[in-house]
Image (cartoon, rainbow, N blue to C red; front, side, top):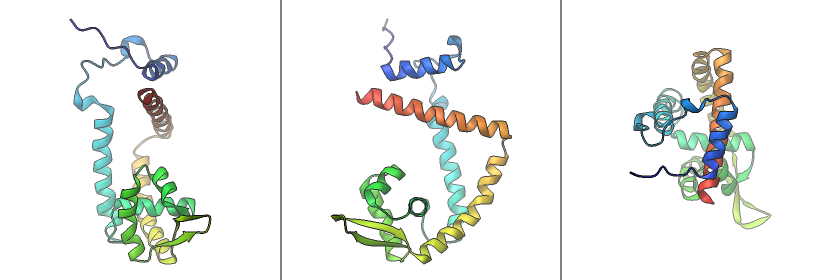
Length: 182
């Protein structure tokens, strides 16, 4: 008979946080019998893939030849203003090689401008061009009704609960990651 594995400190802390928030011990999930289709990463990943396919098909593809990754990078640049690839990598949770590959078509089309960083000789600053801003605005105007329709499938209370759940899962994920890195 195998001994139960001890939870990492971060997982134990996340479980304690859950208990403090009102989750009863008998409602906790057993890690030994959890089915793949019940993995939160599996379910969220499947939903994310379905939504990303719809996003690309319905409001990015009709407006431009770029994909979802490129559009997201444009969104980060639009939101944060001029920034360098390292900052874009942190914000988008993509590695620098992915950033470089995704940025090149945007630069080639003139939608993202790249200039030498006067503060750092080996770095470049990125910003949207006027044409890039116009394209981003067009796609965003197509995206807003779709996103609103998704959110309107939930009541105001459900939207607030979803925000709290996503925030809580984000904190638990960070705590678990720190615990696994230790």
